Length: 117
Ligand SMILES: N[C@@H](CCC(=O)N[C@@H](CS)C(=O)NCC(=O)O)C(=O)O
Image (cartoon, rainbow, N blue to C red; front, side):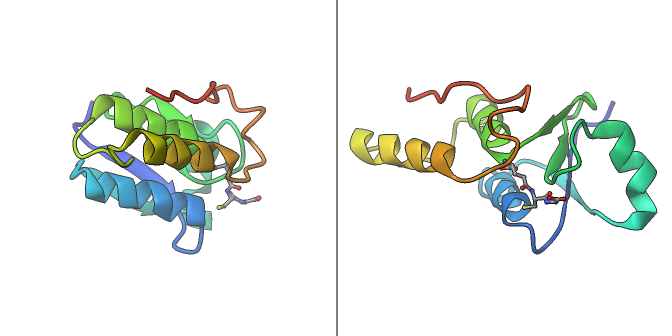
């Protein structure tokens, strides 16, 4: 058990750096692991699909797909919120995130309906 998140991603993966930005913005301690051939066995052991980002939670359970990862972080670490306070802007922010393209969005076991709370 560690108290840190571990985010496995690539600098040129927009979905990876989006999650990293949220972790930084919320000041959540995390370790960045650059995906490479050197950590292929580690990645395969922890990933359910061959896509980035992969995040390991402090209890070492894993999540993939940036949108549900962001939702999880937002629910666990509510301040500062990654969404605007004003209700209409908040709705648009959440909607745009869920409309963002993603091959795992409909198949990911972590994908759920968006929460507009
Ligand atoms: N819906 C996923 C999409 C993940 C995704 O497409 N990741 C890309 C990098 S940004 C990837 O891993 N591509 C590798 C591949 O397609 O083999 C998310 O939002 O995280």
